[in-house]
Structure formats: C-alpha cells, structure tokens
Image (cartoon, rainbow, N blue to C red; front, side):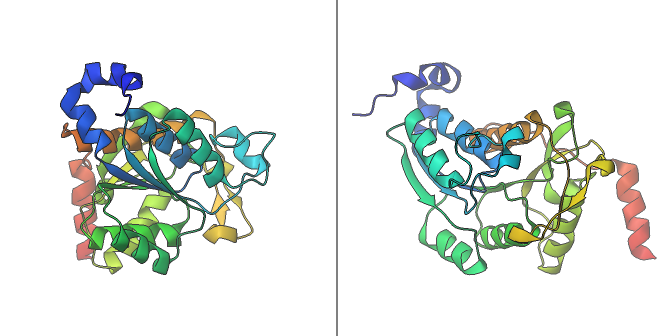
Amino acid sequence: MSDLAWLGRTKLLVGDEGIQKLQNAHVLVVGLGGVGSFAAEFVARSGVGTMTIVDGDVVDPSNRNRQLPALATNHGEPKADIMTERLLAINPELKLTTIKEFLSPEAAEKLLSENQFDYVMDCIDSITPKLTLLSTAYNKGLKIVSSMGAGGKVDPTLLRTADLFETRQCYLASLVRKRLRKMGIRSGIKAVFSLEKHDDDSLMLTDGSNFKKSAYGTISYIPAAFGGVCASVVIRDLLGYPIKMEKKPKEMVAREKKQKKK
C-alpha cells in the first residue's frame, strides 16, 4: 500500500477526496526550462500520481540563472534526466514517463493519441513546437494550460490567468494567437501571462537553434513564478476549484473591433 504520509499537509487543505483526485491524475509537462522545470516539480509535490515529461535539451551555462535542473556541475547533461531523478526523489512511487526529444508534429500526435492525459502543460518557449502541441491537444479536446513569455519582466505580482485570446502585453502570446486563428482556434486554451510591459532593451538575437531566433533577458524568480501559476491552474482544475480568468478591458475590446472593421 502506498505511503502518503508525505502528503499530510496537502491532505489538510484538499481532503482525502482531493488527494485521491490528484493521485489518479496523469499530467503531461512539455518543456523543462525555467517555467517547466518548476511547474513539473510543483505538480509532483502536489501528489499527482502519473506524469509524463518531455524535453530534448541539455543544460547550458546560461540556464543557471533561472532553471531548476541547471547547476555548475551538470553542463551538457539532459534536463529530462536530471528532472527524472529529482521527481522520483520527491515521490518514489510516481509513475513517470520521460521523453528526451524535442516535440515534432508527428511525435506530438503520437504522444497525445497513445496516452490518456488529464492535463497538458505547455511550457515551451519556441513558437513552432508550441503551436504544434497546442493545436494537437486542442483538437483532441484535452485540458491545456500554456505559459506565455516570461522574459523581459521582473514583477511577479502582475501574472494573470486568462483564455489565450484574452492575453495582452506579450509578444509571444500575440504570435501564438495569430497563428492559432489561422488554424481555426479562437478560444478554449488557458494561458498564464504577465500584464507587465517587456523591457525591450533586454532583447537579443540568437543563432536560431531549437526554433528560437531571439530571447529576452530573464531574472531568477519570474520563470519559477510562471511555473507556479501554471501548476496551480492544473491542480485547481483537477480538484474542481474555481480559477479567476482575466478579461481584456472593455475599451481594448472596442478598439480591436473598430480596427477589424477598417
């Protein structure tokens, strides 16, 4: 019989029924960088019984300012391997599947077709793989929470949860919305974003590897905060708790309608 004593404090908050709901859930986390690594750990520590984690990247020295797996002693090691060891050290009874690859359209289709996920967590920071995961999961009717851009921001109190098409002040979100609309998707994806304006002076161009052509500067706690909010959306939804959803200001909606008519 499973020893759930380590979840005693969680049980005080969510009760026996809540613990059972989390134990019975299967959560997919794609992307184990600054947002996803913390999100995955928070989900595991909540008592979710089955997880699948996906990431094809290795630790780079530049990751150490914000990513949970990144240490001075493990440069070049797969993030998925490091997180696998960490999650199983937290909960040895966790049913964990680890996939060490970047998610291609074919791989996303296969993964989401062959497994019964109760929640999909999109913690990808590259536009093409992100769109692949979101569109595939959406078309299969799966519950999704997607992290928008955590770069170029410093104030965690401005994080919000909204339908993806209600997000604003986020360059990544604007690209994702535009591309998803072309795929016929216009609502139904929860997103975590920040109302804070980007610090555009922190933008840098990259070599284009892993589908990324640019990146904003980051501070240690912001990606972790995004991961925490994403994890909270998953846990609260699994437990049936209400989630406050941010809405666009009425004047912004009116302005957008006028622009569409022109």
